[in-house]
Length: 270
Image 1 (spheres, rainbow, N blue to C red):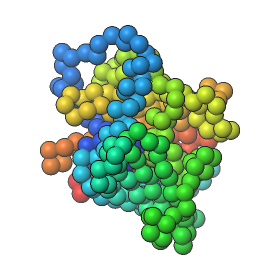
Image 2: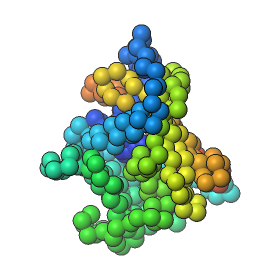
Image 3: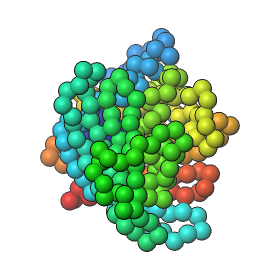
Image 4: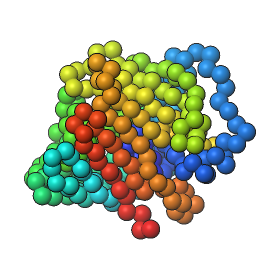
């Protein structure tokens, strides 16, 4: 599942954009392989973030799932969610695609729709609506930017910007080290933005694994605020091979400050 659908990045998500495998399969593909030394951390970071940003899905795809939300001092909630990935016609600047997320009505929550439009070499574009407006055609939804990207999707721990892996577009990108994480050899990518708005992320660490020929993929990430305090932790869960491809079954995001967490579980008809 590509992390563009997140987190299929992140994102990214599905298949073909950003991949990750389970540790056993990954270990088999990277045996005897190693990343070269980091000669220029900033150049390596810009190149790595660029590769992650510019990787479209392999094909159009749709999947269903559920957001399982466990908030402090609140009853657990479940919200159905569907995602549709569509590749657009080739654009002058490079590949273009979009992810459309729709959440169903749930106790205490209205239906919502989020559209994230990606194009290589350009900033992401977001559109979002809830309630009756969520039934509008995707092309007519109101645009969202700035502080609006810190909106929680369906009251979960996923912000709108999380689902677009917005941190990969920040100006500050560098590879700070190479280390093992969850049984895989990873580059650790540090993404920084010079000025973070109140409550927003200021720094994100991503563990990017290279499982062989399938490309690089983020398997874990940590987001920090302007005070360099850990805000959220993101991690992939389990995988299963479906029709010859590794599909993500679930992922988790934890809000350390609010002590809440959300699991995004995919229905793979397993």
